[in-house]
Amino acid sequence: QVQLVESGGGLVQAGGSLRLSCVASGGTFSSEIMGWYRQAPEKQRELVASITYNYRTNYADSVKGRFTISRDNAKRMVYLQMNSVNAEDTAVYYCSYGLGPSFWGQGTQVTVSS
Image (cartoon, rainbow, N blue to C red; front, side, top):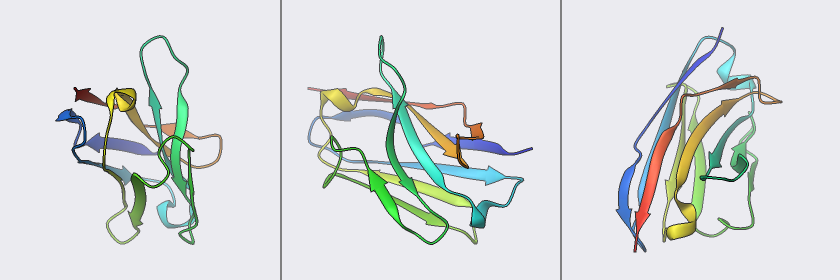
């Protein structure tokens, strides 16, 4: 069983920055793809960014150039650096593990104020 715990969400002003963190316990973290998804009110959950075991990254068009995903396999951590945020980034952000994904964190709220 894999458990994912996110942290770092909160209230941020438009144009500001925020860093989300996710720690994983259980599973084979270093060999799995990890990702960040988000879900805004009344909208479907969407992929924000993902990173493979060999550090290849993928981003949603809406966050390219603003967000950066990274991982530290030794610490079993995955991060999402969010820069130049705007109101459309307001959502609950979820950490994900594996293809599918197989496991989800509980989510952390990010609210961008204008």
